[in-house]
Amino acid sequence: MVSKNCYDVTTWPVGNPYEDVGEVINAIIADIKSRQTATDVNEGGKPGAVIYIPPGDYHLRTQVVIDISYLRIEGSGHGFTSSSIRYNVPKNEWADLHELWPGGSRILVDIPIKGDADESKGAAFYIERTGSPRISSVEFSNFCIDGLHFNPDGSGIHPENSYRNGKTGIYVASANDSFRVTGMGLVYLEHGLTVYHADALSIHDNFIAECGNCIELRGWGQASKITDNLIGAGFNGHSISAQNHGGLLITANNVFPRGASSVELDGVTRSSITNNRLHSFYPGMVALKANCSENLVAANHFLRDHEPWEPFLGIDNGMDDPYGLLRVSGESNSVIGNHFSAVIDSQRISPPGATPVIMRLVSGSGNYVANNHVVAVDVRARTSDSCFSAQVDALLTTTGSGQLAVTTVLVEAASSRNTVLDSGDDAQVVMDRAANAFRPTPSISTSHATVP
Image (cartoon, rainbow, N blue to C red; front, side, top):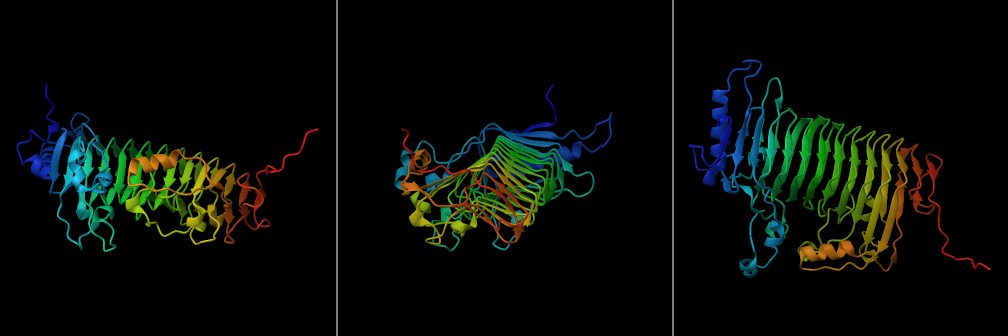
């Protein structure tokens, strides 16, 4: 028996999914609501539905509005491919490319956006419901949301490199419970995924890259997780950001460079940033702001190096090297067992002559910094017009012209009663040692005694 609660956008009789899949999905949601009206029938009543998007290209000109629980929208392929690489290849070479656009089950966001419109108006999928209980168990799985193009921003940069277009992939405006975003591909959106007031949200195994901002958890929330994603924001946005969350788990993500930050937390408590691979072309990779407290930052790999791809040379996030790769404002945070690779050209340090800072405690007290390993290498950075080969070459190069002098830990006067253990030798750690506890990493002598 075929279930009435399983829909295919290509067989639904209302609208044309290839011209406006938004109109089709809204019509399907209206059908679900018209049929599922009873709240209690045989201990059930509103099971929700699945909407299937087969592989293909589907323009979305009407925003999808979701106000029902238990809805799953799924496709058969996240379809991600690099639009940035294509747009930075000369057009006369496009004819030789195997494909030009993302694929799979692909939504093309063609919503007309007015310049003064609220940002939510540019969302392909808008989720909101008031009243009780909170909207729950809305799922997005295994399809691509493509913003298509970026727009000029007045800076003179190539318009397709601006990361500005007013478009959002998924925008959740109201309090929600147990949402899932899995196996998605989000590309060329100013905001990939924006969620307010999340409880038990799961963002897992997605490819969210070449977006102005990738994952934004706003307002407040609890007990959510961001795990096993491939993520990369633009130079004026955040790869992962969260406000006022408790119990947030950020684990096993591979965060690409070019984002203004890899992870930025604002007022987040009792949460974990663990076992991530974080790569950035700028300082300010991970920032704990606005009194973030009792968080664990552990077993992450931080890599800071230079932009090797010629279309983005000369662009940065506005932070200088003393700003710190990891910056902490708050109480009783633990920074334990992280590896930092600072592969920096000493001739490109900003401001010139400054000493780069790896970990910087800005304010608060009772923070615990222990057993972190810092490798600082002075290199002569090379560039290329090939994005892939340039970045691979940079990643695989482990030799430099010599060691780079860095401050591994800087504790500002506004931060006190911290403990710093084995995270830099006596010369690499800068702090008031009367106001903080310190044990230096043992130094290895550069001289070699002659054994008789």
